[in-house]
Image (cartoon, rainbow, N blue to C red; front, top):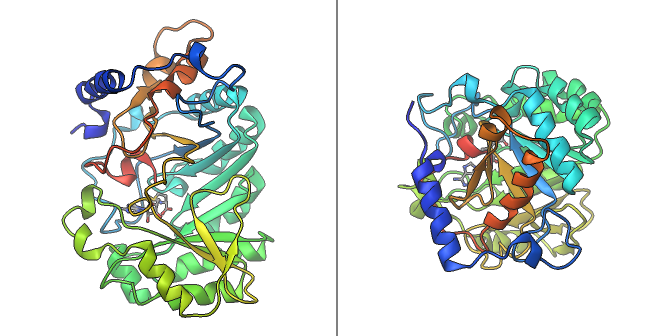
Length: 358
Ligand code: SAM
């Protein structure tokens, strides 16, 4: 198996050396007195984990995934349900408040709803969220709600079925839309739709997405295309800055800013007059202060706790979980890992969202 750059130990160790040379690490003792254990060296409290439960996906979005499945991790390397539950219980004990299940596509992990239920009942994570491409949502919606998912993000880059088929390399938009209908029919009060706008692909659809927010309590968020592994070459040509989206939105009518609520992410959102839903932008590429309010870390399907989506810093939790250890070792490793979180993203590198979890 080709090891992805992100998982390469030599790179990791080099990154660690560079991080400590550039910024002498403040040890836990130097943190503000009484700071919760999941606080980084820059005073940011980490309350949110994005948990990739698989690196497999049933779509092959052209800017996200390789065409073939050659780079997937061997199945024995994927964390088991018991291991995930143990990590999450420990993190909750340290102050974690929210988990988002992601991937790959979380709904393709066998027994996914069973895992969610265990995370709720045994790890007692206060808020459980899901990012999905929606392809299997119609079939699984009821089980997911019963298991404890409270917030749903559905990724849809275009509302045109033919374009959808092209961008996802074969996906069926009608299945995704039926999944959304099913959630509303089951009483979900609101949900989010995430779209990556790309020049010449779907950048003429701002109005069509905005219309969704007029009809139902859907929060549409346009995410800037990031120059990751599978869109590197076309990034410059396709990238649409949030500012362009905001100008297009402003042409639709007066926009009312929406205040950020607790647990809201980095989106800046607005409401069109009378709309039950909201529309906004997430700007990882163009917004200079994006990192200041970062409250999250990521756990890959194979157990790497990544401190920043755009950095090399990680701790191999699988090694700890499957190795010899004393009581308290996992807890100590998790608290220490916060010292590796960089102040700012180092720049975009050659990884794929599928490998880490978007
Ligand atoms: N399969 C799930 C889904 O579709 O939501 C979860 C994983 S997917 C990798 C998460 C999100 O990452 C998707 O909304 C996808 O559009 C986004 N994504 C992937 N590559 C990206 C890139 N280069 N720039 C911006 N967003 C990207």
